[in-house]
Structures are given as structure tokens and as C-alpha cells.
Length: 257
Ligand code: NAD
Image (cartoon, rainbow, N blue to C red):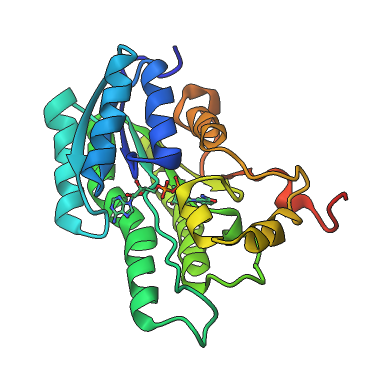
């Protein structure tokens, strides 16, 4: 088991990457605090873990609210005694996020509040807990769009993920001597609700698919395995890095037919 008794908090764990990671980490021996705003989905994730013989609790928290983030970290410590791994994974991609002219200020604010400020609040509350535990690992979910621009615009989302990546590097440097590693996971386009709702026609999906050398969308489970590497001692000499798991999209100039 690669995460035996590691107390792990995962935001956005009611679906997609967060859920798959919660289930995988629990199977690897971690005890999970499942965090989300979707209480039904969160309870389902807990049930999936328990049915497989693992340990998990659900905590409702909106990551864009500082008080909620403090409460989620307190829950990890009150329930399991400490926090070892913090996966700041919750994120949104709003349908009316577009180019600079189209995107309303409200869309910008909501996206940045969840995707970027949410990671900041998670770290603000979580780092003292990781320090109390003697160190640990933080994983922040960024995206391949933090590394390259898309002609199908989603400006607020892209800016938020660029911020996550920059913040990850700086946090890694600041806390390196405290045995706290901070890395970013950069998924490519995935077959999860988040992206499939945004690319809501076959034409839009095909437009994205032509850029992916592997010719398919990634799966949440493939991101969970990458997150497992970043959470475990397998990545013990890795901090401030971005782990790009994208079917080759960032490597491509021209994709094969
Ligand atoms: P998803 O929509 O399946 O899961 C996101 C989860 O976050 C949901 O359960 C949702 O309820 C939760 N959430 C949303 N707002 C929240 C808030 N304010 N507080 C707490 N929880 C909240 O999507 P996913 O694809 O699993 O996305 C997970 C992460 O991966 C996100 O940060 C996303 O930006 C990122 N990502 C996704 C893709 C993709 O193609 N799907 C690509 C790159 C990066």
C-alpha cells in the first residue's frame, strides 16, 4: 500500500478526478476527507470507499469561502488526528466563459474565486495542519491550459489555472525546508462532466480532439494514478513541479491523422 494511514483531504471529491482519486487513495490505505458542495455526490463517494472496505467521511465546504476551508481542515484533524495530504482539486468551468469581450465580470469573479482563491484558502488553512503533522504533500489541480492557449476561449478558467501553477511553484519554494512538497497536476482534456458540459456539441468535441495526439479524451482514473504518484513517497524529491498528463497535447505541433 502506497498511502498506508495517510490522512488525505480531497476537494471536489463528489465526482470526476476527485472521486476517482478518493477511491484509489483509500484502496492504497489512506483515510479520506471527501469535500464538496455536492452533498449527494460526496455521500456516494464515501459509500463507494466504505463498500470497498476503506475509511472516509464527508465534509461540505465551498472552497471559495475561507470559513469553510478552515472547517474542512479542522474536520480532518478532529476525525483522524492529523492531515498528511491535501489535494486542492475542486474547480469549475462556466458555460459563458469566453474571450475578453464576451466574458462578464461576474463569470470572471466566480471562476477565479473557486479555482484560484479556493486553492489559496485550502493552503492557508491546510499548511499549518501539514506542519503540525511533520510535513506532507499538497497537490493542486491546474490544467494544460495553464501552459498553452486555446482558440476555443475560456479566458477566466485559463487565467485561474495559470495562477494555480504560479502559486504552486512559490509555495513549494517557501515550504521546502518544512518537508511540505507542493506540486501541480496538469490534466489534458478529460471525459468528465466539467468538460463534456462545456464542449456540449459533437462539433466542439471534435475540434478539441484533433489536437490530442492520442486521439481521445483522458479519463479521471488516469489523473488519479498521477495524483497517487504526487501524494506518495514515490515523488519524494519532487516539489514545485507540474505533472502534465495530457495524451501528448502540449508536445504536439501537428497531430497524426
Ligand atoms: P467535475 O465537475 O467532475 O468535478 C469537480 C467537482 O468540484 C464537482 O464535484 C463539484 O461539485 C466540485 N466543486 C465545484 N465548485 C466547488 C466549490 N466551490 N467548493 C467545493 N467543491 C466544488 O470535474 P473534474 O474534471 O473532475 O475537475 C476536477 C479538476 O480538474 C478541476 O479543478 C478542473 O478544473 C480540473 N481539470 C479538468 C479537466 C477536464 O478536462 N475535465 C482538464 C484539466 C483540469
